[in-house]
Length: 260
Image (cartoon, rainbow, N blue to C red; front, side, top):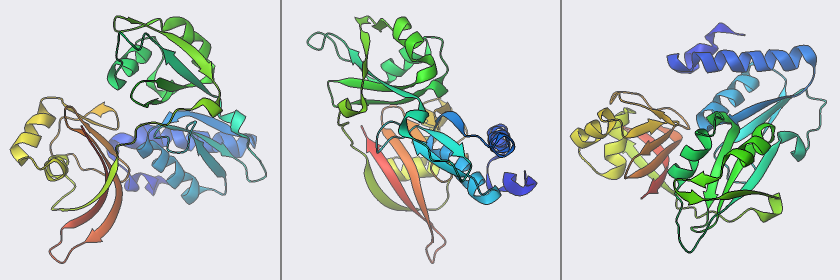
């Protein structure tokens, strides 16, 4: 692998970059496709960048439905024609007593991860406000189905569904354009949610912020393309585009914003 591939990405992303390099090498050596676990948007961006820069290989992303945030990637030689089945994604509907209970995204995710299966085996969790569905890697689907009987104190049952049964998720993401003085985490949060820098700093330092599903406590953490920021109590931000600078050297951003 070209060593300066590192310079495009963050220091802490190096272990992931090394993993991607191994996947690429495996496909090149064995001349057979390789399927990744579920990737978040930032990881998918790194995979795509590396495959395009370093190789002649092809790749496809699939998360089970059109607007999926978390996707599996199939990396394959140019002669290969992949099919949808090869992404090994199982859709489950979560049956629960709708009249007596409500479920939430955090609770569902917490239960899934506590079943003893790593986060990378789970794709998106979607809801239309009442029904809930989750995408799971087929390798662990039967195990997860056996393990998950309760979410909080609500009795549930996971039932296999076909792709034709995917519900229409409530999509409250809006696209917003913004100019900011820097890509610092505290700056972007305070600009999007119109709160003081001090307040956004407090949110970050008190552990209420996740970047790409990992807690981030540094206010000066620099955001990059396709990062997803979750702010407890406020919603989520995705950095979808960097559109250069204004005359006053402010940075123009395109953001997906989910407001609670």
